[in-house]
Image (cartoon, rainbow, N blue to C red; front, top):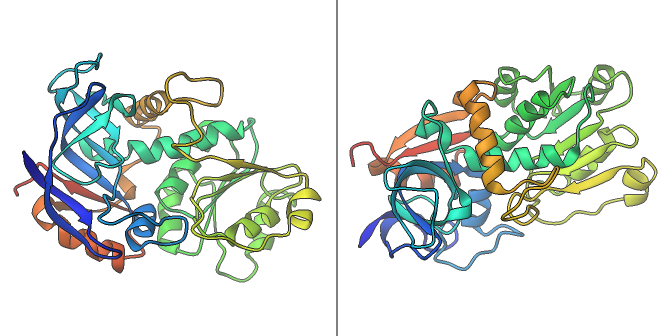
Length: 335
């Protein structure tokens, strides 16, 4: 059997093509997609072959999706055909039907839409980072780089008791969105005097926690320099390259703690522990927050495209549209 799916045939050349649909393995769940979310920053890096993102081509981009259970492998328990699910669908990406490991699939609450559930993998990315920082009530945080992960980190830190929660970015449109998503303050770090404004907001100390969501190697210097003494710096965005860094001046003398928070490689697979939850447990938790309306998703959707328009829209997003947050591909809309 075959279905439609987006593949990068070579660096910078994503296309909608026909892809094979194998039977699910013993511990795999076959999902008929309802919606998939383009994680533009990460997918742009891999499709274009940027540093620290050098795949073999053809390459399957994408990993955020929601849909219906089509089939289950013989070793799968807890899922039945027709169940509404969200998944971290690496090596499946944007396609009509794909097989996902059962430990990367969670049920969607009845009142959560497929569009919103497609954000689950990025919500889990932010949530595991927030957990690892062990934020105390009343600590100030900065979310540096206001993409989807940065806005979720801001909202989840707010839920965890951070105050104030500060969004820092050079894009005013994204800062406006952050203001609708529990940012107590927004700071444009492309303007004069932004460092002084940040110090004023944090009573002259700097933030206790900085989430670096940028994926820009040099941003770590800014993150460390803006942070308070004894602060934690959480690396949520995957740095695309390397940078010179003065550990003595920017880390050691301030007694900073740098926390690596990769959403796949730095979490347990089957059992959750304090501050280190599995994908499934964190993803289910994120969906409960969405269900209760305490985490906003709708402001993060820049556009929705149908399957028939997805190939062209995807290529345009990857090559040219640097401002969009989340693009949803609707796989159930007319083909």
